[in-house]
Image (cartoon, rainbow, N blue to C red; front, side, top):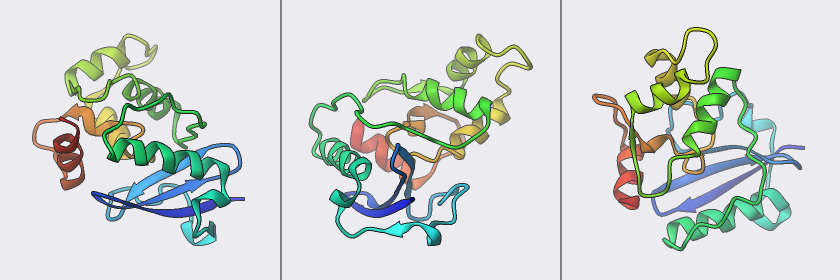
Length: 161
């Protein structure tokens, strides 16, 4: 079963989507890829985050993040849906520490070192960053891309730094 919950963050509403095994999505309202590959209308809407063990854990993590408390290790499964290349990029994004940023060029170097075909083409990297279905927790906002900014990214960076 898919569970949907609306988290009221300091930066706007975040729609959380989970199944019984892990977190599938966390999207800010108006985010480019809102809902990702899922039909959110078919998910069971819960009004109390404790109705889903996964969403309850995500809410506790987000509460700590927005309270600027030390972030504990994520104790729930992240299950973003995407291509093998996107999965690789999203794994690399998770290595960027809180309060730090990297350049798109640095991310490209990290990804290219592991790719056997074609490396990490910049346009493909930007596409993977933009299609990130788990906002904040997979911190695509920590990659600095000249000329490509969004209000959500700027707000998150301002909040963290």
